[in-house]
Image (tube, rainbow, N blue to C red):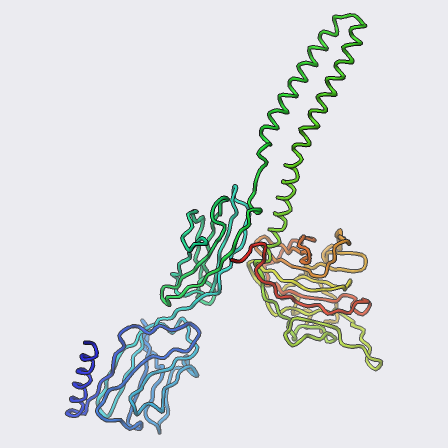
Length: 517
């Protein structure tokens, strides 16, 4: 039925064209949906009885706002110059080879959020103009959601799911179990925040209680594009906080025993004051025996409570590891900046690794000044984590510096030392030191420090250094600055180090112990 109606419409238009020299444009039935940042085609199909000459066609695409009508693209024939607003230069294109067949569609490149709205396609053949409106809507799918562990909440584990780069504002975030059903736990918080580029970041928090389904899925749905993105994890029972069931009875029994011992001792002492010396001596022996029995009983209960202490120590170790894994969940991609490095340092092609230039007899490497290289990325807010492989090197320095300090070092051509605006951990043969006050930090020599993790928390104003090889914290340094901060790597006294291994930025993913389904 729809095909017959369309055929009748086209036949009617062709008959009108033959009589009056008129033509028509097929209007789009629905708004055009495009992917943000990609090319979009706005349709405009001409229907006429005969193919027009391209030289006689005039095509004008305009974009209407509340205050103005913008010339997106105007074509006046093959031999005349086209016009367009400067905001659309190098971003629009007509299908010139298909104009004779009636295809007047416009290709809009690298679409932006400001491109959304109503466009008009006006076609003029001779003295006959015709116009049709085309509405453009844009949408974007965000990155794959990330599930991170937060602190313990009562007897459960707090989880947060977040993802960025979504458009429009209405993505739906769902918490699901291993059977693809909505979880029964109450969502504690849910936020949608606009990012600087206009897209949106969504996040949601939930507490998973023990004894339920340990399979957790975070699914985000874009209703405009009818698409979804999902991440799954599996939580082991060992990570739920527990308590020793024997602890309350043990405390009650211990208090009763202590009260009995104290009462008996009091009665014996009271009787001792009124009996003969020989009986006193006998009672003293009996009192000592009772005290000894009480001590033995208390020692026995203490040994029973040993299991509770061991379990408490296990929970403390799990909390330490959760802090490290939570820091890793904020992993950031850091690359080295060739424009901000010491002239005697060489950066690899992937901009992840630095080493010293080879030393020759004609040109020995002295590495004077500050052998440092700064990261391209700078951070003004939020939380960011990255790792550097130092291998067996003893002399290195890792940390962050301000934009001002970064520009100053480059201006001085790395000839002087790093000054104010620098927070770092320095390693030498004598141990670990902080840059600010030269404080020596206790170093666990039994554990190799081959991989150093750095967690920059600009919300709390500090940078924490981890031994990423085994997952424990080395030291935390407070930062008092609101400036943009850049990661940096330095060899310190590189030429004197026996191990000449390079320093390498390591790409780290979202951490385990969460086990993927």
